[in-house]
Image 1 (cartoon, helix red, strand yellow):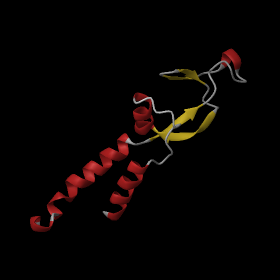
Image 2 (image 1 turned 30 degrees about the vertical axis):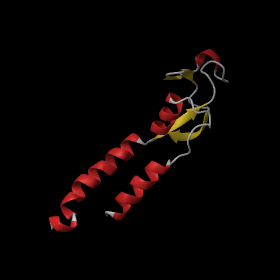
Image 3 (image 1 turned 45 degrees about the horizontal axis):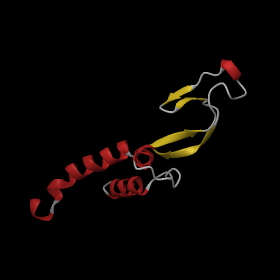
Length: 97
């Protein structure tokens, strides 16, 4: 069995699952808490960049890829969801079923 690499399947599955956990969808919020129709009554969501109204989402992005973009000051906008890395991990696990 080990001659053809089948002994590595559990390790590969675990690696793909870890990639899926890392490359997960993260909502994009657009309106700061208090600047929305709820005013001071808004129960905002705390993010690194401030408090945002949970009712004002503008889609989703890949959390890991967005963090990389921000670290490298790339101003190409936020990555799409699912990102290419997540698509490959999903496809790999789909084929392993």
